[in-house]
Image (cartoon, rainbow, N blue to C red; front, side):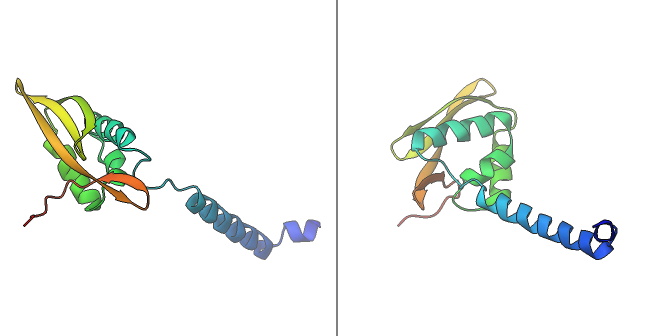
Length: 125
């Protein structure tokens, strides 16, 4: 037994197996993108924009990833996010900028049974 504990190959194998197990467990418990309901989505989007944290916003987006999340959060620099709600198929974020109140609409989509927002403007026709 003592010989096995001092063997470098044994520890390399233990480390490799432990690392692979950690990776599989991390993947298995990785959170699904989006939220279960549009109201939860509105709360999560509002909180991410209030905190100006693109890392919290990114998993709530249907497209664009990190760049779009950064751009969307940048849009809210210097603003005060009042509230967010789900209305008419979109998350509506109410905010104040330089004393002027405004709304920002993010259309809601469903992907794999989860609700996400699409901040990328696409032409309709």
